[in-house]
Length: 466
Ligand SMILES: C[S@@+](CC[C@H](N)C(=O)[O-])C[C@H]1O[C@@H](n2cnc3c(N)ncnc32)[C@H](O)[C@@H]1O
Image (tube, rainbow, N blue to C red; front, top):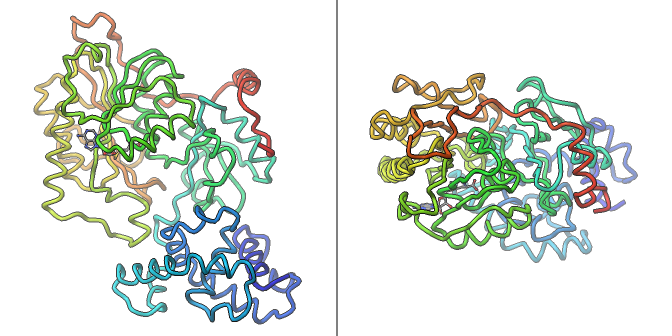
């Protein structure tokens, strides 16, 4: 076995806990044990740095045949090790094509962290922060399959299903090829952190959506029943829209708006792949959408996930833990926009419930915006307690702020997030189709076995050969 392939195999074995590094090195068929051991140790030491460089250079997306562990070993050798020195064969040729980009990403990382030597990157890179411990959440797209079929598929692929999680600790303890069903969302599978499923056939076929747990909560809390009309005000790239469509079972209507043509184009691809057929996409400023337009007279549900500083985003926290705090000026501008767009959304005449969410950790974009909108609505709307059992609540800057929900890698093993659920205090008498009772905010139950049988017959094969 060649050196790099052997090192990749040992790395994979260590990560999936098949044995100790030393044991796996000795068990490999590679003759120069010392050389192999040194290469694996060094690659492991720089693991976080290599992950960051490989991800930002888009290496695995561009080179579909290159497996992640081998990529790590090769990129180590190219950027931090001794160079290929006549070794590497076809992989060396492949890496050469990406050399400039990889080197540039390494240089960018150093500038970003204010260091000049590779060694200095280890200070931050070798200590995994809480963001790197967040599990990989995978939402099963119920428009195309069901949780049980997806679970069966992974089991056939050699993954080990551990049942439904009962605590956060269960999620944090996931290792190797083990996976769980989330305790809160019956369509959410949970894999160990760093599991990469971008190349997985079920993802490519739109049966799975790679979506953080916190980002699944807005649609779940909006909970529009099938047949209802929903606005997704700032919708692209569309993960939450596809979740809404799944909750609607493609029955009813989603009016989805976004300003950004590029993001809308990738959203259209995502929705097609996910089998969404109840959504009308519009490249439009939501602030210019008239609440009195006849088309929206039945809209009882609005999801508002506006542009924000993104200070809670995992990718930002992974790049530089604790980074991403926006300037006061930027925060002021963002909060002003968020307030305008939220107040505008609350003027839709049939609106019953609105979920406001951001992936920001800043109070200015969260509790402050919500408080201002409540004041402006003059008592027409109140906050509903969002998942009362959720451990991390809004900052108590006003009486009902605890009804809001926060999320973070440290407290909920998710990305940083904020959610507020607004509900109308009284059903407007002029709207005959409005439901008289408040919709149920509790999480839905796990799917029944019977449904699985029906879906299995209708859905494309989820066997390993798909
Ligand atoms: C946080 S992202 C939305 C993410 C999306 N909800 C999802 O889950 O995939 C915010 C989006 O708002 C869009 N946006 C910003 N201002 C807008 C406006 N005035 N009207 C409509 N969309 C807007 C941005 O282009 C961006 O795509």
